[in-house]
Length: 84
Image (cartoon, rainbow, N blue to C red; front, top):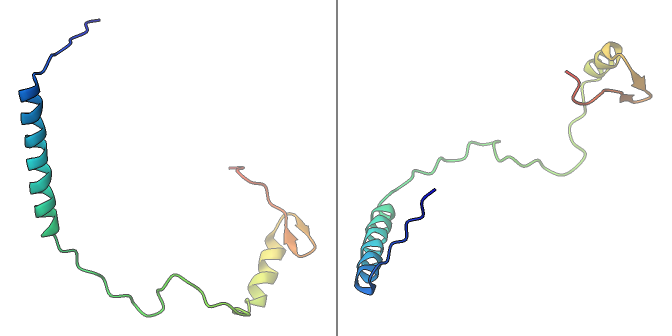
């Protein structure tokens, strides 16, 4: 394993700092020119639900789910997690 130590003069450090600043300034200036079009929100696609009573579930679907469930406990379906 080799260890290389480079000694950089103060003038070289200042030159590196100026170059880095110049690159960052140029990048930020170009980045400022980028325009990303905003998608207009579609109606009903807000991602949030209205608070309240909610929508009544499909009772026939519920009955079918409970009929097909191997294990039940009252109003709950008993299922194992992470069992593939």
